Image (cartoon, rainbow, N blue to C red; front, side, top):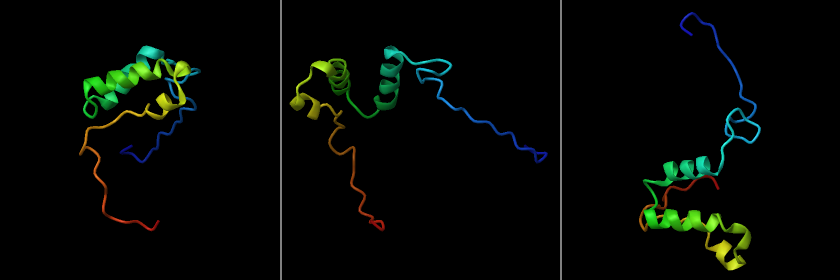
Length: 85
């Protein structure tokens, strides 16, 4: 604060957590996925991924391996800089 006071608080559990103030249901998680990926994934890839995850208990091992959403070619670019590892 401008007068030097510090306001401090902590949220022990996220509001969307099952024990949180406003737990997310399936529709909210799907909405969050779309919000975070709309500018990355095409509509077909988003629909494919969401369809597959909703069938997860029935997927074969091969289908689970293909579960990750796929960004368009060229979206992810390798960083040429090398760190300490």
